Image (cartoon, rainbow, N blue to C red; front, side, top):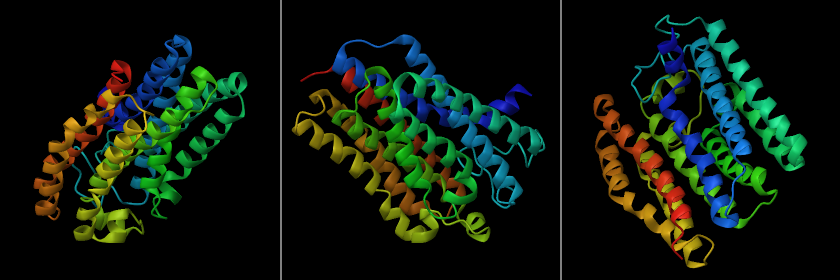
Length: 295
C-alpha cells in the first residue's frame, strides 16, 4: 500500500519543487547571509504538499477521462498507473489530492497571516490552478505556461517569506527554474500525444505536431542559459552561476536523440530520462552557484 501511494505521488518528480524552494533559500543566503529555519521547513512542506496534490488530482482526472487507459505507460509518462492497475481506488486518490491541497493551502494561509498579500496572491494562484490543471489548463494548451509560472512563484515566494522583499535575482532565477520544469512536462507529453489528442487535450506537442515540437525543445535551454548568462553579465547573478553551462552536452544529446526517436516509444524513454536529469542537475547547479558565490 505504501509503495502504491509513493508511486501515485510520483516522488521522482517532486524533486522539481525541492530544487525550486532550495533556489529561493540559496538566494536568501547569498543576499542576506541568514535563513529562518522554521519558515524554510514550512515552505518546503507546503510546496511539496501542493505538488503532490496536483499529481494526485491529475491521476484521478486522467483516469476518469480514459486518458491513462488509452496510452502506454512508461516510468516517465502516462501517469502513475495506480488507478489503471487497480492498486488504489479513484475516490482514494481524489481524497488524498484534496487533503494535500488543504495541507499546502493551510501552510500558505499561515504565511499570508505573517507575511501579507503577496503570499496571498501566490497561494490563490496555486490553489485555483492546481484544482483546474487537469480539467481546464491542459485542455487550453497552458500546461507549460502554468508550470513555468508555478516554478517562478515558488522561488519568489520562498525568498519573500524569508525577507519580505522581491528582488530581481529571485524573479530571474524563478523563471529559469520554471522553464527547466516545464521542459520535463514538454518532453513527457510526446508519448501521450495520441491519447491526449483523442480525449480533447491540447498540449504544446499536439498544437505544434511532433516533428515541429522537436525543434522547440531547444527553446527551453536557450531561455534558461540565456537568462543566466545575461544576469551574470549585468552582475545580477554571481559569476559562479555559470556552472550550469556544464549540462550543455546533456541537453544536446537529448535534443538530437529526440529528433531521431520521437515516434518510437522504447527509444523515447532514455531521451525523457536524460532530459529530466538535465532539468534537475541544471537547477541544482544554479542553487550551488548562489551558495558558492564567486563574484
